[in-house]
Length: 119
Image (cartoon, rainbow, N blue to C red):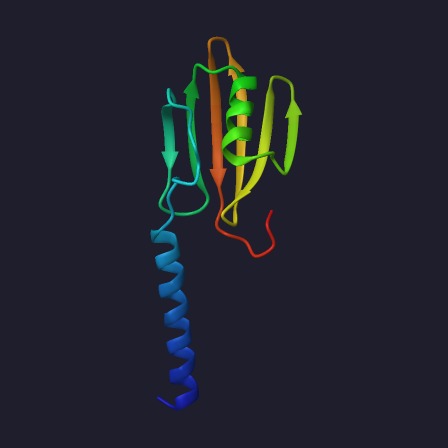
């Protein structure tokens, strides 16, 4: 194998190792959750990571919880009965959708891989 080809193969392999280690270290620990949060579904260990579950906090209490834990969101969108908070936490774009369902409030969150320029 000539030097240029060997170097290209080494760089490609190194890139794959870095990507694999980045994916292996993915977890949802950057996402604070209310104390009574009940997990319904989780997809983790690779990006995008998703968490869905319920709390007895009201939707406004959930928004206050995240403002307290993560600061003011970069953006808030809303439609009928649902709002979505957008954050950038430790370089990870984070989207938290909140939906009031009677006595329970659904929280659906998605954490993406780190980005160089934010969201």
